[in-house]
Length: 480
Image (cartoon, rainbow, N blue to C red; front, side, top):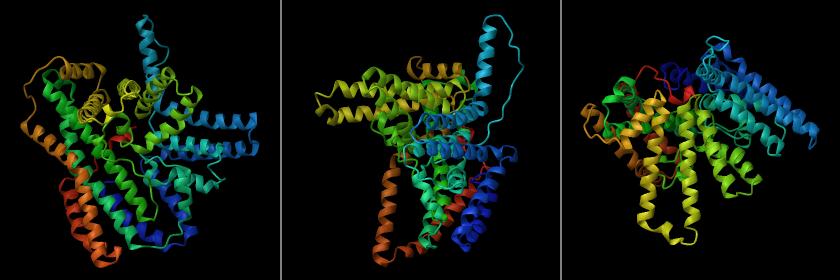
């Protein structure tokens, strides 16, 4: 059931109404049942998988805490992580590894001893696997104070973030699962704000861009593309995936807010980043901090942040982040490019430590801002391209094989330019909307009166959603 489907939006009204009608204790079981039903609506076959992961991880955490700081406790800890990674690897990467191993065997003139293997990818497995691992790590480090199995299950399965994040922490979410808040109209207003804005981002921004991107990235169209086309398509896909994923995050945050639950933010105007590290502080923020806290910091603590291991870990960890996004060489290339950008920036920072004034110079800041934007857009090419050959051809056109004709309809370039302008103005527009809200609150003296100013905005958002409806077009990150 897609967040932007009529069935989901219509079902959400009675679901939220019944939630607030129930006592807090009953709300916990109600939300868990709803979450399982939501996941099963995508395919009941794999509904057992997140439950199995929850059960195995909770049992390992329980045994680990009982054993304490002993070899047995460490074995339970590592065993729990290994179980999650084995399940994730089988369902997500079995096809990829077997296909590449078969290709390697054929290079030596032999035939593999197995036929085609197709393992279906369960929805959201990358996200709830990471959350299960974080539960184990936080339990071992004392950040989790022995929550009940129901708490742990709600933490992993809570449906707004189950399929595509945001990736949450136990201490952020479990305390909210008492569901003891009283109904407040501001919760409804804030939740609807995010939900409807997400619908607009998906249907009005992401989906129209997606049709142009799909056409431009057709393998048959690659040969006729020019340098201008290559850059325009890179920007178009960068905007599409941003609006698409931001829309899902906003709808997840909005849905949770309707029930009084606050999920962490996932985006903060990423294309306004002033450096590669700043980009990762703005893009998919919950994944970035997961990588930082559970991979990057532990690895570099072991090697005392020496330059060689630091740079190698950045490349390796970002390569793994690319593989996490999808089982394909294009995703790995995207991750390695992101790691390379971080390494280059670290090298530049080290080289200019003795001249701190350089960093503040306007030409340098502007140069890094433009370079970061160009590097991020470049990396989207292998991420989106159908094959490595297609990515290589497009990158060559963008950087060396210059051709300046236009092979796409004029409307494509106009639409991309329009969305670029909107993206550039987005922080300013958001600030103006907040100022208007604060001004209204100051005049009325009651923040709840903001609800009275929203119906027209809601009506406009719904009209845009209906006018640009793309028949429940799937979110890009659902496939990761």
